[in-house]
Length: 130
Image 1 (cartoon, one colour):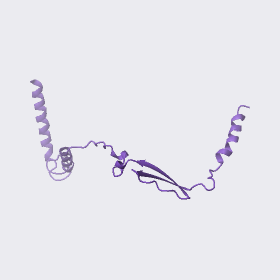
Image 2 (cartoon, one colour):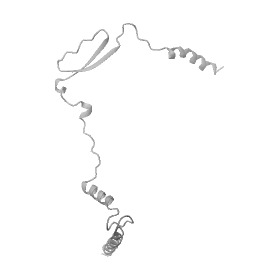
Image 3 (cartoon, helix red, strand yellow):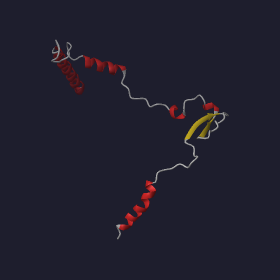
Image 4 (cartoon, helix red, strand yellow):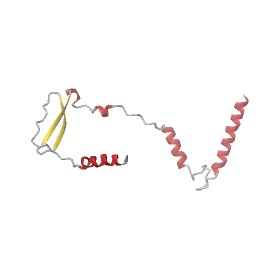
């Protein structure tokens, strides 16, 4: 019995849900929304339309809309030095002193990198002792 009650409610609600929206005869088909500034008149509506006017002060006529006036958040950008170093590193593959198996003389950079690491370790040990 308790399962019948929701079904009865659903059956009563179905015609209301299925009824298509109808517009009364003679109702306007078109609605225009305009912004007028200062003392400018709002245009008159015609028989088949509704005109809605929003009034703004004269000082707003040639300004950027308030929604667009806010400051944009600055994107976190890379410095030009960092960009140049990245491009240099990326384009360095396969060139002499690049420590790469690709390209001619790419292997010569492996010894240079080994020496630079050894020098950095020696300086770190020296600084740790002091």
